[in-house]
Length: 256
Image 1: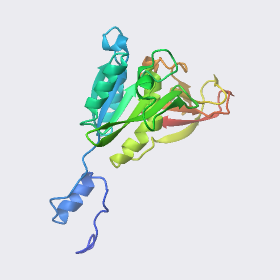
Image 2 (image 1 turned 60 degrees about the vertical axis):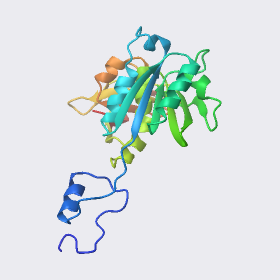
Image 3 (image 1 turned 180 degrees about the vertical axis):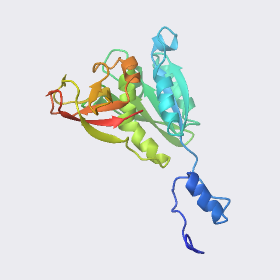
Image 4 (image 1 turned 90 degrees about the horizontal axis):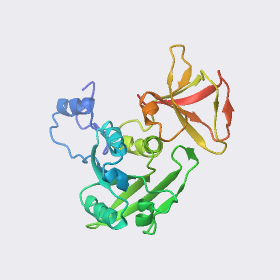
């Protein structure tokens, strides 16, 4: 009785199941508990060039790993720039998934298939946020078999998709499985100067040097996925900052 007395409440409803939770339940003689199944997520990469195999599909693979790192399950799909085909695919996916993530087709171009397919549906929003990379974003929903499934619509450039996931999706998904919502963070001096765009949160990629200074990995472009792969930090430059000198402090999130 020094740990938990007879009749004590061990865990509140909604508590995450982890090794110590299981051990405590077993020690108390409880071998059956009701649990909520983890979210099943669908990732849809759009673009005729991707569906036809002319351009490698990196987005669904990269986001699939990001989802699975949280202990969730992800299925991946490809769809060309065809509104009717995308609509049919989303209706099918919504029958047995809890969340749909799309990449591409959300900007203001002539053939933005996700925005054109979902933009006029009830409750949908498509617009821009003040982030670089990752400006164009969208939210919508699909109703299937009396279930309403949220659709989070990310931009198509690979770094934009990954940064958007980190900023907007990873925190609530982590919370859904009982993990801390935010990445480990800190501040450190820059190893080199940088320039940024006023009015936008610039998310650069980098790593900590042996002397504790932040070195940038690649430029700010949204297509530089190889340099993203060599980084272990996201470096956050506030909206009002246009330039920083070597030695100035920057905030970072550890991603690897």
